[in-house]
Image 1: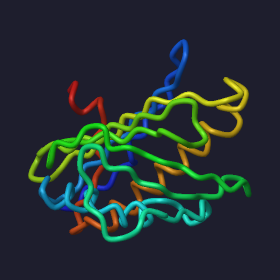
Image 2: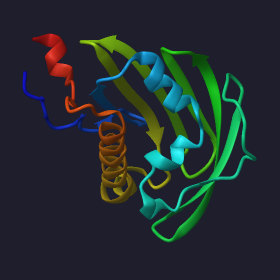
Image 3: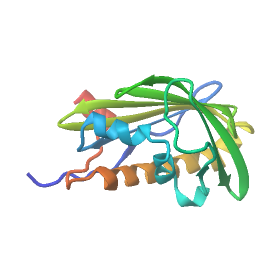
Image 4: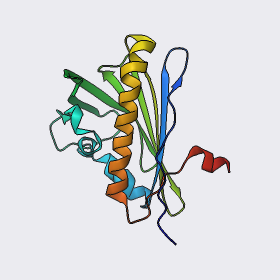
Length: 177
């Protein structure tokens, strides 16, 4: 069977009354355990973040991630230096974890990561709920497009990292078919 290559499924960002939701999925041809282990190593966050963000982890290394872990980092967003602190508010290896911004550029940022065994590989889902200062105008012109680019970059890195010639995205519509 020939390798299957399709576009990454990053759904359009949904607007809720007081926040936005971004959802993305990618299927990777590796076990849930190996994919989760990659995400469980905080240093890999630097690999998954586009270079134009100048992302650096500030928390002294090495450290183990688990529920209650705090991770400090800095980045540069449109030439503005930003410090960010996340807390791991839920940790359930190898199926899910949640990171939540407790200090940073967003009014709210909650990122649910899930890992599901599917079709001999792993379906990785990202569900992000967030709100931004400046409301819809700032979101539509700056934040929304940036997040789409960041998640497209992230999926490209994951596809290359975990590929064995059969990298494909799994869309939400596939589940409904």
